[in-house]
Length: 225
Image (cartoon, rainbow, N blue to C red):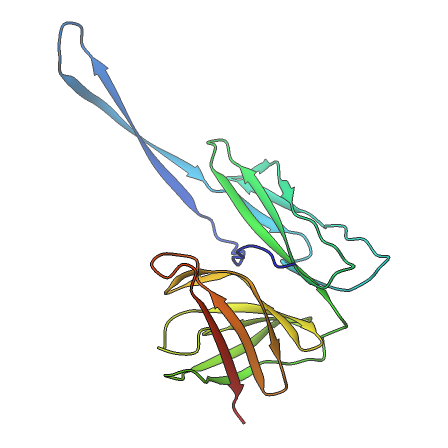
């Protein structure tokens, strides 16, 4: 099962600023008079994901998944967090647990946890390195392992035109991987299954935004010696 878009959780303090214009109608007049402008600062919900944004589990026919949960706050106020998503530990794949919270002004924030159910322990696998694309105008992409149990980030997922299309993928073992949903120069792209060998990575990119929505591109990366 492949989940929805994942964005990295950044511990940043972000604010949204709103302006409220108060207008008064004077009796017997047709004109509107602007009398006051008030600025209001609203703090977007900030999340702390317990035990981190990535969890890797071995496939099991008997185990059950219990989510560690998350907390959220806005300008020092603790918010109620709603959790969405399920994990089936009996089926390999990538699952998304989504957390949502609403601040006092009705602004909704969200954060995601990636849960990978793998064929076997992938800690000893290392797919990091520098790869060359094999499409018409091949470019270079650097792959970096960011979690020991199989989460990687890559500088470029597309493999040609030297476009800015970064992404992340998960190693499921047995030469299987999942390219996670993301966004880049050509807009959003969907999560998709792929594969790897000792020297190659391959996946399909399905674009989601106009004018390229629906286009699928097969990509092969070859590792440099």
